Image (cartoon, rainbow, N blue to C red; front, side, top):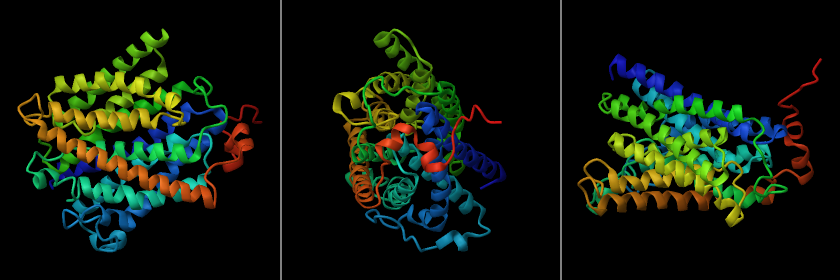
Length: 403
């Protein structure tokens, strides 16, 4: 790795790390004022815990020596002691850690306003160990998803930056936790209004900024060969998704909202994540419009189906991740059904997407259920109604009468 590639790797690592505070602001603005500290702390708790676990053993688990291995040996270089002095390995490990952190942080949006911090941290550590670290190995570290095309005699699975490993993974786990913890008190359409839309827009802006590192960061391994395509697609898909989401709001409700603009941006970013290096920009633009429209419609599912995914992790990340991953089956450069290929690309994309979704949901449900039935995952209804910030953290987000 030359100095330019190394410099970009460090920059991209910082950009992706900055995305998790972006998640904290985005989620924090969406909850009620008396839960903002709790919501943001779940993201910052993930930054602390997952960074440590990744360096201790997660990085070791994220690469396998055989196609059908579950995960790498967690003790092969415990604490990365043998990697000291190896710049390429260590920067790669740091870059990978930021993906693990934000994937865990994304899950927290499904349990806003009602989760205990300690229980969340236990869930985060176990889920990262049993789900994210192995899935990262499957997708990028030599595992079955990376090799699925070769095994089946079809094109390889495309997931450049994490449609399966990050967004479908987090969205499926979020759905499981939403079911385990149940609905918030008074759950109904319109009952829980975002307390700070400017926070939502700030968080969305930080995420869009950091996402250029998220999508283009791994190009330090590729001599920056596709960086122009990746950056352009990350821009246009996101912009188009904002317009798609706002159009749906205008038609449905008569008014385009700031929260809708921020949510649309995230939907576009999610959808382009797996596809950023494998779509012509025109097809990326169409993907953004579809993601904005379909995710804006998908967030209504929780009211129709009766699950309380508080901050629409399912509607944006699970649905958006599925859209972006499956879209490649139709429009991936040279291998999509309408761009020179056949149904093979769609087949492997679907197997990878639904394989990760089912695995993550089942394991997350088991972990969450076990925590709820032992130490408890959800706060009492009284604490939830009062606002959990002073109960769980002894702080308030807004102290307006401070002397």
